[in-house]
Image (cartoon, rainbow, N blue to C red):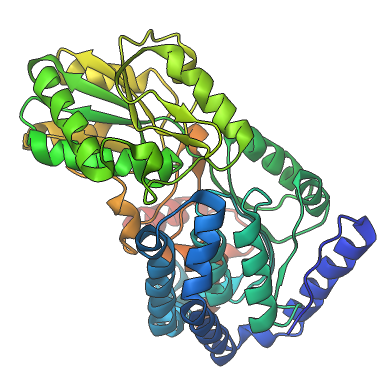
Amino acid sequence: MGNIVKETNAEKIGTAVQKQRDFFLSGATLELNFRKDALRRLLEAVRKNESPIASALQADLGKSEFEAYACETGLLIAELRLHIAKMASWAKPKRAPISLLNFPAKGALWPEPYGSSLIIAPWNYPFLLALMPLIGAISAGCCAILKPSEFAPRSSELIETLLCEVFPPGHVLPISGAADTAKELLQHKFDFIFFTGGPAQGREVMAAAAKELTPVLLELGGKSPCIVGNDADISVAARRIAWGKFLNAGQTCVSPDYLLVQKEIREPFLAEMKKCIGSFWGPNPLGNPEYPRIVNERHYERLSKLLSSGKAFCGGNADRESLRIEPTMLVDVPLESPVMAAEIFGPILPVFTIENLDEAISFVDSRPSPLALYYFGKNKEAKKRIASSVRAGGICFNDTIVQLTEAALPFGGIGESGFGAHHGKASFDAFTHYKPVMSRGCFPDLPIRYPPFSGKLRLLKKFMNWL
């Protein structure tokens, strides 16, 4: 339907942004049937391109066909089906209670799309993290310019082709390019910005948005801790942590970033983790076609340097030619080492020993709030304490990553891990302004509210205290 914009030329980007604004002001996206039809076309396109999507993810990140469907295509299909089924009810005005102070009156919250939106997507889950927010934008009635990541070129190219086939350019438009393209886009006025990436880039996005007072949603990641209590099921914990940590070769924003293991179970737990890694990817993970690779040489070099931050309990080997790094567990890691300075975003897992839950919570609380926190253990009081007192974007007990698959659980960060949330209805809400509307009757029209006020204050206080 449309043409891909591949220019960083300010004039051409400016023209594209204005077309989006004009399309939104035409009122076309306010029609629920228009939105639903757009979502259905996108669903059909995702289903039709299941095989090309898998091929693109294999080329960019070495993902297996199973992982491509489980972590990207399948989740997109589920999200699209949910929005198609529920969007009409989400878009209805919702009644709001009105106090006796304004009797007689009615109140309502009218969902209103923000308007033209900008979505800047990352490379690690290039389809999921580009199209998931786009689904929310379309469902809410917004227009969207989507910038996919240049670091996943095959996926980016397919996203551009797919979107241009499905949508008119005024409604949804992909704009490809490197960091200078994103910077140019941020110079223009949008009604909402959705950004997924690192904290440093998030600050740049927020600074640019502040110039136009544009609302933003930032998903920024962070160092997500995983605590293993002494009453954990060791075999289940080891399997689920190994799976969650080394999924996509650790290039997941909610991947367990480091382990805090209680002293009593440290040795058997580490042994079980090593066993699970061997069971998943065999004696030579670097040669296993189902084991993903690092996205590019720059990130490979960065991660390779982190391998020396501690002693390799297992793994530790790397292959520059294939850009693969073995699933690695590091022990004897100094807290001030480079691997603990920032989010790892790779298949390296530092392990620390703790005496008890108090020490674990103190450890986590002394650092920036993570996007996710994981705890393995059976004690209900420990879970309650963690859920009620530890600041994190989200928490999952006795598993990793899977909280992201539940549409009823909004996904987002807190503090340095971001703010705002999406998935399911939360995605609709993210791109929506809930406009309060009150309708009053003309009688009675009490004179107490009007000047002159002499002798009325006592009566006013009595009335308002009674309400």
